Image 1 (tube, helix red, strand yellow):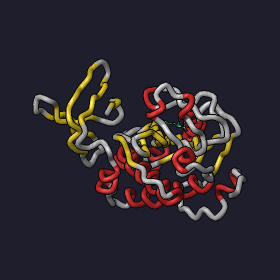
Image 2 (cartoon, protein in one colour; image 1 turned 30 degrees about the horizontal axis):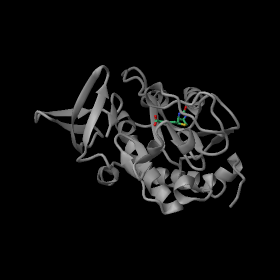
Image 3 (cartoon, helix red, strand yellow; image 1 turned 30 degrees about the vertical axis):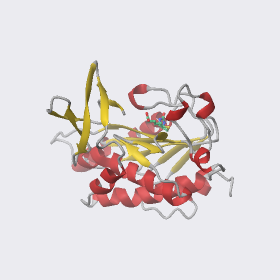
Image 4 (cartoon, protein in one colour; image 1 turned 90 degrees about the vertical axis):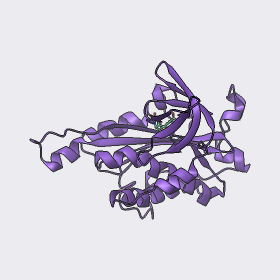
Length: 269
Ligand code: BTN
């Protein structure tokens, strides 16, 4: 297994059209989300990959800290530029690409907990964070200017070789690919498999195709009784389905239905 984890090794023979077109690899940075956002604001091309061996202030959804020991896992962000409609559902492409790349590189079967945690045997192996600016819709600015303003940053933290079990308060909650397989896994192989698959799926969405059925079939949440935290509110009920926008359809215990947006809620199974 190659241990060369360099920008050159990542780009070598990658063969994608967009994803990883430019690679910035940091030994250490605060958060790849912030670096990617700054690069996007100064015009970085779609597909620019910002990856770090260590983050000193990695963050997850709702600003929760994201911890990952140096040199063990994958922590990266990608600059995306597209229509608001595509950016709204791009998490479907990311989740499906993660499930497929884990299967293809390791043979492990992963599922997704809505909205976009990736899990193996019910334990979280990967988290996805989307942050973005959808840009101005002003009719005074040209289409090109609007596309330039509009970007999103997709952030992914994937536990590859770090065994989180001993340090967790609740060891049943997280895992890594190496923990599941009992051997070291190549970060480079996993990253490149992800970039290649994501590249294809992103173009599928861009061309008007749908990933809804495959994304839905990855979800291990449907049919389960769940508790959803939503600001100060708590909703309980059965996660009955997801719609084409990626919203969760919750059937409350009183029989009524509510549509939940991924950006606003946390979900407990
Ligand atoms: C979550 O499950 O809450 C999402 C976790 C996302 C973590 C990744 S690691 C790379 C990128 N940089 C960050 O600071 N966060 C994301």
